[in-house]
Every structure is written in C-alpha cells, then in structure tokens.
Length: 113
Ligand SMILES: Nc1ncnc2c1ncn2[C@@H]1O[C@H](COP(=O)(O)OP(=O)(O)OP(=O)(O)O)[C@@H](O)[C@H]1O
Ligand SMILES: [Mg+2]
Image (cartoon, rainbow, N blue to C red):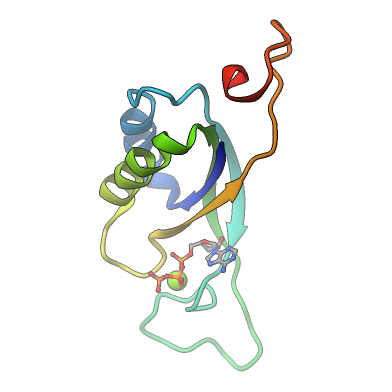
C-alpha cells in the first residue's frame, strides 16, 4: 500500500477528481485546502521574490491510500489532468503505508482501502 499526496492548483481539482475517481482501486480521496511554495518561493517564476520573503499560495492537497499496483495509473492521471506547463503546477509524493482500518467492517490492510 502507498499513500499518494498530490498538491495541485485549486482550479484543477474537479478535472483531477473526475479522472481519479474512475480508476479501479481508488477507494476514496481526502482533499484539503492548503498553502505552500516551491522553487519559485510563491512567485510566478518571472520575478525573483525580495530577499528573504516567501509567499504561501493557495493549493489543494489530495491524499489517497491505494494498493501498489494503483500508484502508476493515479500518477498518470494527475500528471495529465493537473498539468499546465507553468510553474506551480504541483508536486506528488508517494509514501509507504503500514496498515489501514475500515471502521465499519473491521477490515485491515488493502482490504480496508
Ligand atoms: N519539496 C516539497 N515539499 C513539500 N511540499 C512541496 C515541495 N515542493 C512543492 N511543494 C508543495 O507543492 C506546491 C506546488 O509546488 P510547485 O509546483 O511550485 O513545485 P516546484 O518544484 O516549484 O515546480 P515548478 O518549478 O514547476 O513550479 C507548493 O506550493 C507546495 O505546497
Ligand atoms: Mg514552483
């Protein structure tokens, strides 16, 4: 199992969600409004920020726990539907997941996803 943390541009949320929710093995998605910066330190990439300053820009973070085999189609869908080609398009992290629990049924591991 892996946890995928995808930080994307908010206006891409619905397109990315539409693409992810039809992938077999995607049992659910958590979405959070977050703020962040990357290499451009919150600027548009055309101008350097003033020395020492950083702008946190609104982003959306999607969190999905999926079986290992589902990581590749999820990343492909995010790459395809969150991409504009401009700085700030986003970042995706893939983390190992040790266990999961489906509260209603008591299922554990992949069966809980
Ligand atoms: N190394 C990182 N660790 C944690 N969060 C990050 C990291 N890099 C980016 N983020 C988050 O992802 C968001 C989008 O990052 P962004 O797309 O600007 O990355 P980038 O590496 O600067 O790429 P680009 O050059 O295409 O802009 C940031 O606003 C921040 O919330
Ligand atoms: Mg950036």
